[in-house]
Length: 584
Image 1 (tube, helix red, strand yellow):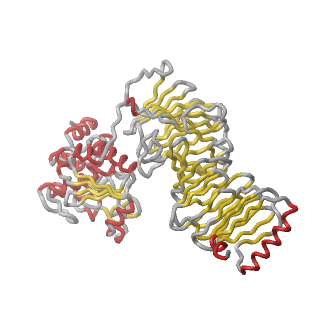
Image 2: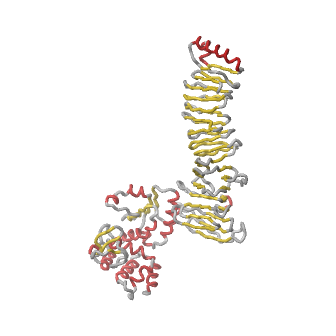
Image 3: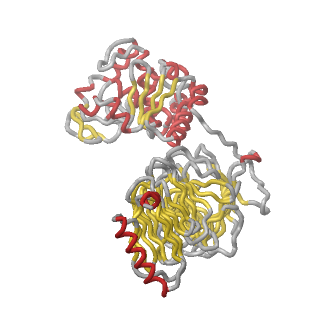
């Protein structure tokens, strides 16, 4: 008898209230006889309940239900046929019907599969489970990563990071709070957050239904619907609801580590993924009220639809995606390509695009290297930053002449952190440049400073002609340039913030002394490079090289002639400057 009780205790309670007292007396006798407490019994049960437990379980029974405490690994408890095992320690509470009302326990080295009132979860080894019934809802908090959720039968909430749930034999990943109504409908609670299928939303202020069919759901006031190729978002209210879209949002091309921003109010949108037709994504937007708004911001393009009018912004930085954006209220269409071009057209008929097709080009490191013929190295950048830098690099590369291009061997584009980490000597001297050119033919720049390519490329061309870093002599070109420039240290004295003072103490904010800027008056290195910077701006040089102008200084024409002769600037740039100034 003792060995039998050490293995398990079977308590079958199928009694009326009148039999409770006799059963309690008999149970007390058994406990006292063998001097070992496997379960404690207090009072009577309101309804039938069956509990079975193995060794190492303490039971507390009352008319309100049962508490099971795990005191020893390898034990189990079974409540109305629902078995909980592979648990190291913790507790489970059930009501008089055998329904789990709360639980907190730790699993052992094995996977655990548990049924909480019809909601099945499978959790990894060595995990903590916390479950509570709150206002009739089954709430799972802080679920361990990679927990699987199946067969949801009740109102429920699942909270955790990198969780998985199954519906119609398909697995869906999510992080945050996923809620279910009694009919199985998924929704986002108004104070919750959720990351699901590439969208991120936090405290929307209202309940938003989630559908997995991509269809229109008129019965729902506010909803998101995911389909194979269609994404729908309806926000009928006038409270702004922001959505963030990341790389897992398959309906648009979004770079690694980037997020698009899609806040709406009083509107309805659909984004169509059209890869299978060889077309770019299409976003249709319909305002449901005169105060409705739709925004879409990704990379450097921002679009707003408000009051049936489009507003465009190009200030946000980063990489863009190609997109067609249709205002269903007025039938206007915006086309955006990933090169920063935006076209607005008016369609004659719904569904018929009577406009010239915009061709889109996605640049890669490999394709850009092939295009410019130089090695490109990135450091610490997101995919969007890379894409944007490549596009800028391609655009600015077209402003360089052949000889200048040939002076460049490699281009490095780094995040600000990596720039400062790799080249700490600038900090020592209190300098924080956006880019610099090495005598070895390498141009290094911070991401976002690609516009400095022409300036730094001029340094590389200068090195090829015999410039010695830190010195103003060496080579025929330098000797001729020095004759026009004079002695730099006698013209520019001290630096004060973003400007310089000349020898008389006057602040220099405009071209003077034959220099394009105060910065160009530092030395021959910057004098040459800043001249090249302005070579595509004829209006800048016009008063400086026109003999009839009050600002005329012959040194500007002399330096331009040298830059042209020694292949710093193109024929087109040189003759355009002369033609605009009327001195050709």
